[in-house]
Length: 395
Image (cartoon, rainbow, N blue to C red):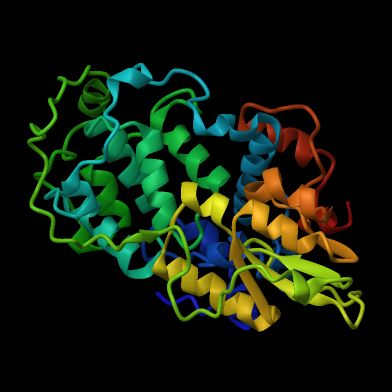
């Protein structure tokens, strides 16, 4: 599984999408998934570009599974837009009160040493590629929350750091859906489900998940026994399998501190890790393009080396200047610019609007002003009156 950080690679993957194969086999680990998510998350291609590229070859009804799944990403952004960083807290009480769950992720999960093949294979795949099939993410989340009794937020933060496609809304709200704090019931799975959708090496017969759904539901509802510090029976001797997460780019990526002289009295187009598509054709010829890594964000949300390199390599194609600094130093450097423009992005919204005039990021579905607390509620409003998926691109 390879993710070249180029727009050409993203467009090739759009060309390769076969919607009927996707709809039929997407739940299988070896199914016809698109592998587009890192490119979408980082803005190398937009959701409208994905839909336009696919519908140009494969006319689709708006209710097609492929369009439906694109809708989930916009729905998660809808929830984030209405709730803000409230998505980092449980939207409502889940199977057990939050306080009943552990506040640390056990070492054996981090080190892929649980003895449950599906979980250990998933963690190995995550570290090796920076990617995890959506079904595997659900299995991993369900095991961590409902069998190991770890709070969903703890594990969601961990997974986000290692994913090339990590998006705070999609990742954390998906964990809440599995945990039952963002849905009506917890998501559970068993060994039979794994055997149906995963390769043989992932099969987990005879393990803790080789039970009926009724038995697993009962386990999910059991109050865990408190574990004293230093008395975690699940801990293993760390083999240091887990790659480190960094709050700043690794050396050698051409990133420098902010330089006020480079942008003084100039038009500036500010790019960031979530708008790495082609530069707008309308930019004045003398515009200075500046790439941005904001230390304030990454102190809270560190990334793996894989993700730093994926983003930095694409950013280098677009911006001769790539800055890393805190909000104060970046704001001070940009004050002398004639004009600063960028694309809005909720990951950076607390800071970006202070420095730049921000354009709205492109979307597929029309904005739903009223907060929707379920996907079906949002979908009914967002897709109302639309028949052909291509119509969405002109709404």
